[in-house]
Image (cartoon, rainbow over all chains, first blue to last red; front, side, top):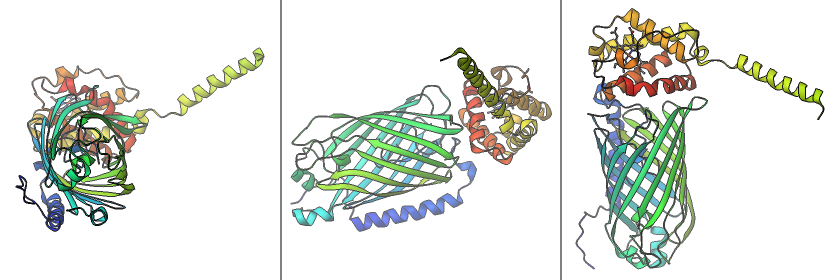
Length: 302
Length: 141
Ligand code: HEM
Protein backbone atom coordinates (compact mmCIF):
# COMPACT_ATOMS: atom_id res chain seq x y z
CA UNK A 1 0.00 0.00 0.00
CA UNK A 2 1.48 3.32 -0.98
CA UNK A 3 0.25 6.61 0.30
CA UNK A 4 1.49 10.15 0.10
CA UNK A 5 2.45 11.42 3.50
CA UNK A 6 1.83 15.07 4.15
CA UNK A 7 4.15 14.81 7.13
CA UNK A 8 7.52 13.07 6.75
CA UNK A 9 7.59 9.63 8.28
CA UNK A 10 10.22 9.79 11.01
CA UNK A 11 11.49 6.34 11.98
CA UNK A 12 11.33 5.56 15.70
CA UNK A 13 15.10 5.41 16.08
CA UNK A 14 15.46 8.84 14.53
CA UNK A 15 12.73 10.13 16.82
CA UNK A 16 14.59 8.80 19.85
CA UNK A 17 17.84 10.29 18.58
CA UNK A 18 16.09 13.60 18.10
CA UNK A 19 14.67 13.38 21.61
CA UNK A 20 18.16 12.77 22.98
CA UNK A 21 19.61 15.62 20.95
CA UNK A 22 16.95 18.04 22.14
CA UNK A 23 17.55 16.89 25.70
CA UNK A 24 21.30 17.57 25.39
CA UNK A 25 20.69 20.93 23.78
CA UNK A 26 18.31 21.86 26.58
CA UNK A 27 20.90 21.10 29.24
CA UNK A 28 23.66 22.99 27.43
CA UNK A 29 21.45 25.94 26.58
CA UNK A 30 20.04 26.15 30.08
CA UNK A 31 23.47 26.58 31.61
CA UNK A 32 24.79 29.21 29.24
CA UNK A 33 22.15 31.84 28.54
CA UNK A 34 22.37 35.24 30.19
CA UNK A 35 19.65 35.88 32.76
CA UNK A 36 18.66 39.12 31.02
CA UNK A 37 17.81 37.32 27.80
CA UNK A 38 14.91 35.55 29.43
CA UNK A 39 11.33 36.70 29.82
CA UNK A 40 10.20 38.63 32.88
CA UNK A 41 7.35 36.48 34.17
CA UNK A 42 7.86 34.74 37.49
CA UNK A 43 9.39 31.30 37.80
CA UNK A 44 7.07 28.38 37.01
CA UNK A 45 4.27 30.62 35.68
CA UNK A 46 4.54 29.05 32.21
CA UNK A 47 3.74 25.64 33.62
CA UNK A 48 5.35 22.82 31.67
CA UNK A 49 4.47 21.42 28.26
CA UNK A 50 1.61 18.97 28.24
CA UNK A 51 1.64 15.91 25.96
CA UNK A 52 0.09 17.68 22.97
CA UNK A 53 2.66 20.50 23.05
CA UNK A 54 0.67 23.23 24.77
CA UNK A 55 1.67 24.94 28.02
CA UNK A 56 0.02 23.21 30.97
CA UNK A 57 0.80 20.22 33.15
CA UNK A 58 1.36 16.58 32.20
CA UNK A 59 -1.83 15.82 30.29
CA UNK A 60 -3.88 19.03 30.56
CA UNK A 61 -3.44 22.31 28.65
CA UNK A 62 -3.73 25.36 30.91
CA UNK A 63 -4.60 28.97 30.14
CA UNK A 64 -0.96 29.99 30.68
CA UNK A 65 1.46 30.64 27.84
CA UNK A 66 4.78 28.81 27.44
CA UNK A 67 8.04 30.24 28.72
CA UNK A 68 8.47 33.56 30.48
CA UNK A 69 7.64 36.31 27.99
CA UNK A 70 5.52 39.10 29.44
CA UNK A 71 3.63 41.66 27.36
CA UNK A 72 6.01 43.04 24.68
CA UNK A 73 8.27 40.01 25.10
CA UNK A 74 8.54 36.59 23.50
CA UNK A 75 8.75 33.33 25.31
CA UNK A 76 9.10 29.74 24.25
CA UNK A 77 9.72 26.17 25.13
CA UNK A 78 11.26 23.04 23.62
CA UNK A 79 10.39 19.74 25.21
CA UNK A 80 11.06 16.03 25.11
CA UNK A 81 8.75 13.68 27.00
CA UNK A 82 8.80 9.95 27.47
CA UNK A 83 6.02 7.83 28.99
CA UNK A 84 6.43 4.15 29.70
CA UNK A 85 3.45 2.01 30.71
CA UNK A 86 3.07 -1.74 31.17
CA UNK A 87 2.57 -2.46 27.46
CA UNK A 88 3.35 0.76 25.60
CA UNK A 89 5.75 3.61 25.36
CA UNK A 90 5.03 7.09 24.12
CA UNK A 91 7.67 9.60 23.12
CA UNK A 92 7.11 13.22 22.18
CA UNK A 93 9.14 16.20 21.09
CA UNK A 94 7.99 19.67 20.31
CA UNK A 95 8.49 23.40 20.37
CA UNK A 96 6.29 26.35 21.19
CA UNK A 97 6.53 30.11 21.21
CA UNK A 98 4.50 32.73 23.03
CA UNK A 99 4.08 36.19 21.59
CA UNK A 100 3.40 39.10 23.97
CA UNK A 101 2.05 36.73 26.62
CA UNK A 102 -1.02 36.57 24.41
CA UNK A 103 -0.67 33.98 21.63
CA UNK A 104 0.89 30.53 21.78
CA UNK A 105 1.96 28.60 18.67
CA UNK A 106 3.01 24.99 19.16
CA UNK A 107 4.14 22.00 17.15
CA UNK A 108 4.69 18.49 18.51
CA UNK A 109 5.05 14.93 17.28
CA UNK A 110 4.01 11.85 19.20
CA UNK A 111 5.04 8.24 18.67
CA UNK A 112 3.29 5.41 20.47
CA UNK A 113 5.13 2.08 20.42
CA UNK A 114 2.59 -0.76 20.07
CA UNK A 115 4.87 -3.81 19.79
CA UNK A 116 2.80 -5.56 22.44
CA UNK A 117 -0.30 -5.67 20.25
CA UNK A 118 1.15 -5.38 16.72
CA UNK A 119 2.43 -8.97 16.57
CA UNK A 120 -0.50 -10.80 18.23
CA UNK A 121 -3.09 -8.89 16.23
CA UNK A 122 -1.07 -8.96 13.02
CA UNK A 123 -1.12 -5.18 12.65
CA UNK A 124 0.71 -3.59 9.71
CA UNK A 125 2.67 -1.15 11.93
CA UNK A 126 4.31 -1.38 15.33
CA UNK A 127 4.00 2.29 16.07
CA UNK A 128 1.41 5.04 15.80
CA UNK A 129 2.44 8.56 14.98
CA UNK A 130 0.82 11.92 14.78
CA UNK A 131 1.67 15.57 14.56
CA UNK A 132 -0.14 18.22 16.58
CA UNK A 133 -0.15 21.89 15.63
CA UNK A 134 -1.68 24.20 18.21
CA UNK A 135 -2.74 27.80 18.68
CA UNK A 136 -3.83 29.24 22.00
CA UNK A 137 -5.00 32.78 22.69
CA UNK A 138 -5.31 34.38 26.11
CA UNK A 139 -8.72 35.99 26.34
CA UNK A 140 -8.49 37.79 29.68
CA UNK A 141 -7.21 37.61 33.23
CA UNK A 142 -3.85 36.91 34.75
CA UNK A 143 -2.73 33.73 36.49
CA UNK A 144 -1.57 35.68 39.56
CA UNK A 145 -2.60 39.32 39.52
CA UNK A 146 -6.31 39.41 38.78
CA UNK A 147 -9.24 38.15 40.82
CA UNK A 148 -10.61 36.39 37.78
CA UNK A 149 -8.59 33.44 36.52
CA UNK A 150 -6.55 33.62 33.33
CA UNK A 151 -8.77 32.31 30.55
CA UNK A 152 -7.56 31.09 27.15
CA UNK A 153 -9.05 29.49 24.08
CA UNK A 154 -7.06 26.84 22.21
CA UNK A 155 -7.13 24.77 19.06
CA UNK A 156 -5.13 21.62 18.36
CA UNK A 157 -4.98 20.29 14.82
CA UNK A 158 -3.92 16.64 14.79
CA UNK A 159 -2.93 14.47 11.86
CA UNK A 160 -1.98 10.80 11.82
CA UNK A 161 1.15 9.96 9.85
CA UNK A 162 -0.24 6.59 8.91
CA UNK A 163 -3.89 5.64 9.08
CA UNK A 164 -3.69 1.85 8.51
CA UNK A 165 -3.94 0.79 12.15
CA UNK A 166 -6.48 3.41 13.25
CA UNK A 167 -8.67 2.41 10.28
CA UNK A 168 -8.54 -1.25 11.33
CA UNK A 169 -9.74 -0.29 14.82
CA UNK A 170 -12.78 1.46 13.38
CA UNK A 171 -11.63 5.07 13.40
CA UNK A 172 -13.29 7.28 10.79
CA UNK A 173 -10.70 9.95 10.14
CA UNK A 174 -6.93 10.44 10.08
CA UNK A 175 -7.15 14.03 11.29
CA UNK A 176 -9.18 16.15 13.64
CA UNK A 177 -9.41 19.42 15.46
CA UNK A 178 -9.76 19.82 19.23
CA UNK A 179 -11.11 23.04 20.73
CA UNK A 180 -10.61 23.86 24.37
CA UNK A 181 -11.31 26.60 26.85
CA UNK A 182 -9.01 26.73 29.88
CA UNK A 183 -9.21 28.75 33.11
CA UNK A 184 -6.20 28.80 35.44
CA UNK A 185 -5.65 30.62 38.72
CA UNK A 186 -2.85 30.66 41.26
CA UNK A 187 -3.70 31.85 44.77
CA UNK A 188 -0.47 33.12 46.28
CA UNK A 189 -1.48 32.89 49.92
CA UNK A 190 -2.97 29.48 49.14
CA UNK A 191 -3.07 27.18 52.15
CA UNK A 192 -1.07 28.79 54.92
CA UNK A 193 1.26 30.49 52.44
CA UNK A 194 1.65 27.52 50.10
CA UNK A 195 0.31 28.78 46.75
CA UNK A 196 -2.49 26.72 45.24
CA UNK A 197 -3.12 26.38 41.51
CA UNK A 198 -6.43 25.32 40.03
CA UNK A 199 -7.12 24.68 36.37
CA UNK A 200 -10.26 23.68 34.55
CA UNK A 201 -10.31 22.86 30.86
CA UNK A 202 -13.28 21.95 28.70
CA UNK A 203 -12.49 20.27 25.40
CA UNK A 204 -14.48 19.39 22.32
CA UNK A 205 -12.86 16.46 20.48
CA UNK A 206 -13.27 13.34 18.35
CA UNK A 207 -9.75 12.08 19.05
CA UNK A 208 -9.27 8.45 20.12
CA UNK A 209 -6.35 8.11 22.56
CA UNK A 210 -5.24 11.70 21.88
CA UNK A 211 -5.78 11.01 18.16
CA UNK A 212 -3.13 8.30 17.92
CA UNK A 213 -5.99 5.88 17.15
CA UNK A 214 -7.58 8.28 14.71
CA UNK A 215 -10.72 10.40 15.04
CA UNK A 216 -14.34 9.38 15.46
CA UNK A 217 -15.33 5.74 15.43
CA UNK A 218 -17.88 3.03 14.74
CA UNK A 219 -19.50 3.52 18.18
CA UNK A 220 -19.63 7.28 18.08
CA UNK A 221 -18.59 9.67 15.34
CA UNK A 222 -19.70 12.89 17.03
CA UNK A 223 -17.77 15.37 19.13
CA UNK A 224 -17.52 14.79 22.85
CA UNK A 225 -17.41 17.63 25.37
CA UNK A 226 -14.90 16.58 27.98
CA UNK A 227 -13.63 17.92 31.29
CA UNK A 228 -10.00 18.17 32.30
CA UNK A 229 -8.65 19.49 35.58
CA UNK A 230 -5.46 20.08 37.52
CA UNK A 231 -4.69 21.04 41.09
CA UNK A 232 -1.22 21.95 42.25
CA UNK A 233 0.69 23.35 45.17
CA UNK A 234 3.97 25.24 45.04
CA UNK A 235 5.95 23.45 47.74
CA UNK A 236 8.86 25.74 47.05
CA UNK A 237 9.36 28.58 44.66
CA UNK A 238 10.78 26.07 42.16
CA UNK A 239 8.77 22.94 42.96
CA UNK A 240 5.20 22.27 41.84
CA UNK A 241 3.37 19.17 43.01
CA UNK A 242 0.11 18.43 41.26
CA UNK A 243 -2.60 16.11 40.07
CA UNK A 244 -4.24 15.97 36.62
CA UNK A 245 -7.46 14.39 35.51
CA UNK A 246 -8.58 14.10 31.90
CA UNK A 247 -11.84 12.71 30.63
CA UNK A 248 -11.63 10.72 27.41
CA UNK A 249 -14.14 9.85 24.70
CA UNK A 250 -15.14 6.29 23.92
CA UNK A 251 -15.70 6.02 20.17
CA UNK A 252 -14.33 2.61 19.20
CA UNK A 253 -16.12 -0.71 19.74
CA UNK A 254 -12.93 -2.77 19.50
CA UNK A 255 -11.60 -1.50 22.84
CA UNK A 256 -12.86 0.84 25.50
CA UNK A 257 -11.05 4.06 26.34
CA UNK A 258 -10.61 5.21 29.93
CA UNK A 259 -10.09 8.58 31.61
CA UNK A 260 -6.49 9.47 32.37
CA UNK A 261 -4.85 10.81 35.50
CA UNK A 262 -1.41 11.52 36.83
CA UNK A 263 0.40 12.76 39.90
CA UNK A 264 3.30 14.99 38.91
CA UNK A 265 6.16 16.95 40.37
CA UNK A 266 7.83 19.65 38.31
CA UNK A 267 11.14 21.20 39.24
CA UNK A 268 12.20 24.58 37.81
CA UNK A 269 15.89 25.01 38.70
CA UNK A 270 15.91 28.21 36.63
CA UNK A 271 13.93 29.87 33.84
CA UNK A 272 15.72 27.84 31.19
CA UNK A 273 15.04 24.36 32.42
CA UNK A 274 12.31 22.27 33.97
CA UNK A 275 12.16 18.59 34.74
CA UNK A 276 8.84 16.86 35.34
CA UNK A 277 8.33 13.38 36.71
CA UNK A 278 4.91 11.79 37.00
CA UNK A 279 3.09 8.62 37.79
CA UNK A 280 0.33 8.01 35.27
CA UNK A 281 -2.81 5.90 35.36
CA UNK A 282 -4.08 5.59 31.79
CA UNK A 283 -6.58 2.77 32.16
CA UNK A 284 -7.25 0.37 29.28
CA UNK A 285 -5.54 1.22 25.99
CA UNK A 286 -6.34 -0.71 22.80
CA UNK A 287 -7.35 -3.80 24.73
CA UNK A 288 -4.44 -3.82 27.19
CA UNK A 289 -5.71 -3.48 30.74
CA UNK A 290 -4.79 -0.92 33.41
CA UNK A 291 -1.89 0.86 31.82
CA UNK A 292 0.13 2.68 34.43
CA UNK A 293 3.68 3.87 34.45
CA UNK A 294 6.14 6.71 34.67
CA UNK A 295 6.36 9.95 32.76
CA UNK A 296 9.47 12.04 32.42
CA UNK A 297 9.75 15.36 30.64
CA UNK A 298 12.67 17.66 30.06
CA UNK A 299 12.07 21.19 28.89
CA UNK A 300 14.06 24.22 27.91
CA UNK A 301 12.41 27.62 28.02
CA UNK A 302 13.09 31.32 27.72
CA UNK B 1 -27.51 21.23 79.74
CA UNK B 2 -27.29 23.25 82.95
CA UNK B 3 -26.71 26.95 82.74
CA UNK B 4 -23.47 26.69 84.75
CA UNK B 5 -22.11 24.22 82.22
CA UNK B 6 -23.07 26.48 79.35
CA UNK B 7 -21.34 29.38 81.05
CA UNK B 8 -18.12 27.51 81.59
CA UNK B 9 -18.36 26.20 78.02
CA UNK B 10 -18.66 29.73 76.66
CA UNK B 11 -15.86 30.83 78.92
CA UNK B 12 -13.65 28.06 77.53
CA UNK B 13 -14.37 29.03 73.94
CA UNK B 14 -13.64 32.69 74.58
CA UNK B 15 -10.46 31.75 76.38
CA UNK B 16 -9.24 29.53 73.57
CA UNK B 17 -9.93 32.25 70.98
CA UNK B 18 -8.02 34.75 73.07
CA UNK B 19 -5.08 32.40 73.47
CA UNK B 20 -5.15 31.57 69.74
CA UNK B 21 -5.00 35.20 68.76
CA UNK B 22 -2.19 35.80 71.20
CA UNK B 23 -0.21 32.84 69.93
CA UNK B 24 -0.87 33.40 66.25
CA UNK B 25 2.07 35.29 64.82
CA UNK B 26 1.20 38.22 62.63
CA UNK B 27 2.78 38.25 59.20
CA UNK B 28 4.78 41.19 60.52
CA UNK B 29 6.47 38.89 63.03
CA UNK B 30 6.98 36.20 60.38
CA UNK B 31 8.77 38.77 58.22
CA UNK B 32 11.19 39.44 61.07
CA UNK B 33 9.56 42.60 62.39
CA UNK B 34 10.89 46.03 61.47
CA UNK B 35 14.42 44.67 61.22
CA UNK B 36 13.48 41.94 58.73
CA UNK B 37 11.33 44.28 56.66
CA UNK B 38 14.03 46.94 56.56
CA UNK B 39 16.57 44.32 55.48
CA UNK B 40 14.43 43.05 52.63
CA UNK B 41 13.40 46.50 51.37
CA UNK B 42 16.95 47.87 51.51
CA UNK B 43 18.14 44.86 49.54
CA UNK B 44 15.34 45.16 46.97
CA UNK B 45 16.10 48.84 46.36
CA UNK B 46 19.82 48.14 46.08
CA UNK B 47 19.29 45.33 43.55
CA UNK B 48 16.77 47.43 41.57
CA UNK B 49 19.50 50.03 41.07
CA UNK B 50 21.87 47.32 39.84
CA UNK B 51 19.44 45.63 37.46
CA UNK B 52 19.93 47.21 34.05
CA UNK B 53 16.36 46.34 33.02
CA UNK B 54 14.75 48.63 35.62
CA UNK B 55 17.59 50.76 37.02
CA UNK B 56 16.55 53.76 34.90
CA UNK B 57 13.27 53.96 36.81
CA UNK B 58 15.15 54.45 40.08
CA UNK B 59 17.67 56.97 38.76
CA UNK B 60 16.13 59.96 40.54
CA UNK B 61 14.76 58.20 43.58
CA UNK B 62 15.45 59.35 47.11
CA UNK B 63 16.44 55.92 48.41
CA UNK B 64 16.34 56.71 52.10
CA UNK B 65 12.77 57.99 51.82
CA UNK B 66 11.78 55.15 49.49
CA UNK B 67 13.03 52.50 51.92
CA UNK B 68 11.21 54.14 54.84
CA UNK B 69 7.95 54.48 52.89
CA UNK B 70 7.91 50.95 51.47
CA UNK B 71 8.94 49.47 54.84
CA UNK B 72 6.13 51.36 56.57
CA UNK B 73 3.67 50.16 54.01
CA UNK B 74 4.72 46.52 54.35
CA UNK B 75 4.66 46.87 58.14
CA UNK B 76 1.11 48.24 57.90
CA UNK B 77 -0.06 45.57 55.41
CA UNK B 78 1.36 42.76 57.54
CA UNK B 79 -0.48 43.91 60.69
CA UNK B 80 2.57 45.47 62.26
CA UNK B 81 2.55 48.55 64.53
CA UNK B 82 2.71 51.11 61.71
CA UNK B 83 0.50 53.48 59.81
CA UNK B 84 1.22 53.99 56.15
CA UNK B 85 0.80 57.72 55.59
CA UNK B 86 2.17 57.92 52.08
CA UNK B 87 0.35 58.74 48.89
CA UNK B 88 -1.76 56.35 46.88
CA UNK B 89 0.07 53.84 44.70
CA UNK B 90 -1.20 55.28 41.42
CA UNK B 91 -0.03 58.78 42.39
CA UNK B 92 3.39 57.60 43.58
CA UNK B 93 4.06 55.70 40.35
CA UNK B 94 2.40 58.12 37.98
CA UNK B 95 4.47 59.19 35.01
CA UNK B 96 6.74 56.16 35.36
CA UNK B 97 4.78 54.03 32.90
CA UNK B 98 5.92 50.85 34.59
CA UNK B 99 5.26 47.93 32.24
CA UNK B 100 3.95 44.46 33.09
CA UNK B 101 7.47 43.12 32.49
CA UNK B 102 9.12 45.69 34.77
CA UNK B 103 6.55 44.93 37.47
CA UNK B 104 7.42 41.21 37.33
CA UNK B 105 11.15 41.97 37.39
CA UNK B 106 10.65 44.05 40.54
CA UNK B 107 8.52 41.31 42.15
CA UNK B 108 11.25 38.74 41.42
CA UNK B 109 13.78 41.09 43.06
CA UNK B 110 11.50 41.39 46.11
CA UNK B 111 11.23 37.58 46.30
CA UNK B 112 15.02 37.27 46.16
CA UNK B 113 15.32 39.97 48.82
CA UNK B 114 12.90 38.09 51.08
CA UNK B 115 14.99 34.94 50.63
CA UNK B 116 18.07 37.01 51.49
CA UNK B 117 16.29 38.18 54.66
CA UNK B 118 15.66 34.52 55.61
CA UNK B 119 11.89 34.82 55.24
CA UNK B 120 10.23 31.44 54.70
CA UNK B 121 8.45 30.35 51.51
CA UNK B 122 5.01 30.54 53.14
CA UNK B 123 5.59 33.99 54.70
CA UNK B 124 6.96 35.26 51.39
CA UNK B 125 3.80 34.18 49.62
CA UNK B 126 1.54 35.76 52.21
CA UNK B 127 3.25 39.11 51.60
CA UNK B 128 3.18 38.66 47.83
CA UNK B 129 -0.54 37.97 48.07
CA UNK B 130 -0.97 41.40 49.69
CA UNK B 131 1.16 43.17 47.07
CA UNK B 132 -0.18 41.41 43.94
CA UNK B 133 -3.58 43.19 43.84
CA UNK B 134 -1.76 46.58 43.73
CA UNK B 135 -0.45 45.86 40.26
CA UNK B 136 -3.37 47.47 38.48
CA UNK B 137 -2.73 50.77 40.32
CA UNK B 138 1.01 50.69 39.64
CA UNK B 139 1.49 49.63 36.02
CA UNK B 140 0.95 51.89 33.03
CA UNK B 141 0.47 55.03 35.13
C1 HEM C 1 3.47 46.11 44.81
C2 HEM C 1 4.56 46.69 44.40
C3 HEM C 1 5.04 48.07 44.84
C4 HEM C 1 4.87 48.73 46.02
C5 HEM C 1 4.13 48.26 47.25
C6 HEM C 1 5.56 50.01 45.90
C7 HEM C 1 5.61 50.97 46.88
C8 HEM C 1 6.14 52.22 46.71
C9 HEM C 1 6.03 53.31 47.65
C10 HEM C 1 5.35 53.23 49.00
C11 HEM C 1 6.64 54.38 47.11
C12 HEM C 1 6.66 55.78 47.69
C13 HEM C 1 7.98 56.21 48.20
C14 HEM C 1 7.89 57.63 48.69
O1 HEM C 1 6.79 58.08 49.04
O2 HEM C 1 8.92 58.26 48.72
C15 HEM C 1 7.16 53.99 45.84
C16 HEM C 1 7.87 54.80 45.00
C17 HEM C 1 8.54 54.33 43.88
N1 HEM C 1 8.42 53.07 43.32
FE1 HEM C 1 7.22 51.63 43.97
N2 HEM C 1 6.11 50.08 44.66
C18 HEM C 1 5.81 48.93 43.99
C19 HEM C 1 6.20 48.59 42.72
C20 HEM C 1 7.14 49.29 42.00
C21 HEM C 1 7.72 48.86 40.76
C22 HEM C 1 7.31 47.58 40.02
C23 HEM C 1 8.65 49.78 40.40
C24 HEM C 1 9.55 49.80 39.21
C25 HEM C 1 9.91 48.77 38.50
C26 HEM C 1 8.65 50.80 41.42
C27 HEM C 1 9.44 51.93 41.41
C28 HEM C 1 9.28 52.98 42.27
C29 HEM C 1 10.01 54.23 42.14
C30 HEM C 1 11.08 54.55 41.10
C31 HEM C 1 9.53 55.09 43.15
C32 HEM C 1 9.86 56.53 43.35
C33 HEM C 1 10.95 56.78 44.28
C34 HEM C 1 11.20 58.28 44.41
O3 HEM C 1 10.74 59.04 43.57
O4 HEM C 1 11.87 58.65 45.35
N3 HEM C 1 7.70 50.46 42.35
N4 HEM C 1 6.83 52.66 45.62
